[in-house]
Image (cartoon, rainbow, N blue to C red; front, side, top):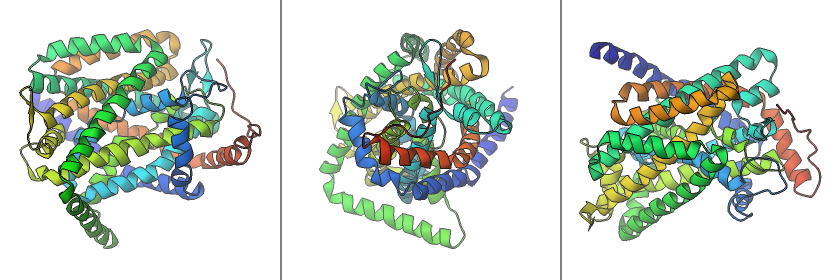
Length: 472
């Protein structure tokens, strides 16, 4: 049995490595460039408006718009599914395998990805459906079905299936296992106890639907980001004399990789930076427009601008602190640790290994923030998976999904999930293919809606682009 599992792991590991290489990363980058040029740098020209809508507009609520949750809650729910292992463990892996220059490529991917995220959310809101119970559904499966001709509809069902499987795996099982690892290694709590707690608390949240999920996410995510960023700022201030050298290392390593690119060689610096950037912020994955579709908004672009800040916060802010502190600490050269453990070691070194209640402060901060981030990832991905399941099997069968998801939350904490992680990476990668195809084909609609918003809607005019309207 172990030999068979090893063979499966090797087989799917090769598929995952192939998919998360240039076969997927190149189309994603090209899509981002298409939207960056076509929308005249919306991620730069629209950032001020986006931040205003997010943080200074009644917490992002459009009271006169239709939807289930506020702008701010939609953003926090989307962030709940992205900020976590990708920012803490993923960045560590990128720097370890690709070197300091990987951070530069992560930044570049994040900036380009903001345009992609904007486009996804615009389409997600524009083509959303309203159900009989008053709730909204949207995302790639809906903008494929309603925006493209019938011959492309198979892509919608493929996306929904890949989404459903990915939600059970990378959005649930491996996350539950990550919490169990943290609780056992830091606080010596048995995995089965963690499994019961995760399933119980996740159940209490997800059974309340999107409004409870959004409410919990909007409390956990901002709090943990503030704690994490505050710790990062403190470390940088304590080691301010090293900051110039850290940036010099990052840019020198990045420029060396640019020379390699011009010479026709694509190295680990570029591939790991781009790959982990995409994996962390999920731009182009098709997940964020699912929750964007639930937002109260009077125009698709209004929510799209808010959704765009997700990538900015995730990659440009949170990932940056992780990367800077790892490079500053020199821990990237430590081959004995990796992932979240490496980030914990880097933060501990940044705090000069100071102790609090018997724990190193740096490792304690990483353990606590990772635990909450990972839990929020579980509830965020539950919602994504539910929408994929409902698209395939209809709403009345969602109870089966709830039971399955919560059962996996428990078992994920007590089993070895290396194969599950690899499979989840494959299905997560496969989500990108149908979404990118739809994004490229519907770029004209995104430009049309963008023009409508900035030329008509903001000046008090009406929503002149006829909104798609479909109620079930």
